[in-house]
Image (tube, rainbow, N blue to C red):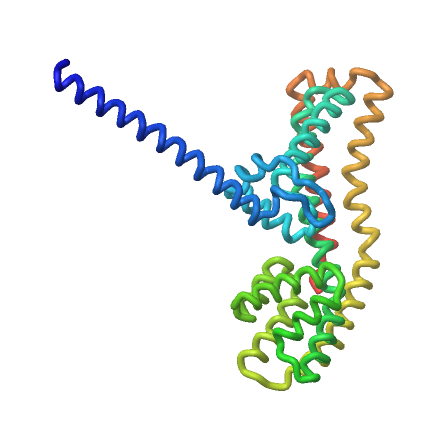
Amino acid sequence: MNPYVALTLVATLLACVFVVWGVHAYAKGRAQRAALIDRLSASGAPDPSGRVRRFRSLDRRLRRTAFGRRLELKLATTGLDTTPGEFFVSMLASVAAVWLTAASLLAPFFGPITAAIGLWAANAFLNWQRTRRTERFINQLPELARILANATQAGLALRTAIGIAAEELEAPAGEELTRVADRLAIGHSIEESLSELTQRLPSRELVVLVSTLVLSARAGGAIVGSLRNLTVTLEQRKETRREIRTQLSQVTVTAYLVPSIGFGSLLLVNAMMPGALDRMTGAWIGQVAVLVSLGLFALGFILIRRMSKIDV
């Protein structure tokens, strides 16, 4: 056999061996990385309540994208027990169901419109959950300030006082303070840990409390007296927010009632004259009229919500 041919065969065989070994090492590395992500995100194992996470592959892929990271952060602030993959699949299924329902009950033209409204509603639901959790946390701030003041007056360090408050308070304050205590336990500063708390649950009351704690930890001073005064102020703001929310409840109901009247009118017209919406949306003039009407209803909803929004 020609020595050049033999050398070529040996080189080809070695190259094939290295290719197979490289593919095997790459696959093994990807499997180890996926297992590590599952352990860190707790998405591959059942949680303490026994619930098994679903759509793990989609969840891993979604977390690598910018949209997935934003969705994960928003879900963390809402306190919902779901992963980005589970929420994404639920959102797509709901949008598809709304599309088919609107297309069958009203007209095919309303399918994409209701799907877009469904996507907006999913984001609005997360924002509502985040606002609701923030409101519950704000209502717990007077008790939190009281616990921190008592613990500090007893001679305990601020880190220890935060740990005690995390054990004493219920969710969401207990959960958020547990995160702060865990970060303090691994060496993070008080300022950094509390700043992340204000980013997760933004509110003026929490910013004031965090500023008081950070300044006291950095420069010293009468932290007990400051927390006592802050407790009284937070109680007063809590009552003020409750009164304002009660006074504006009728306006809030009106904001949601206006679009509901428009949707009910469409159903009524279609029930009285079957096929009327199909004929109306079959021409471009009818489609433009429907879009303009929806835009006006949306504008009315936004204006009413803006006018009823009062920052305290």
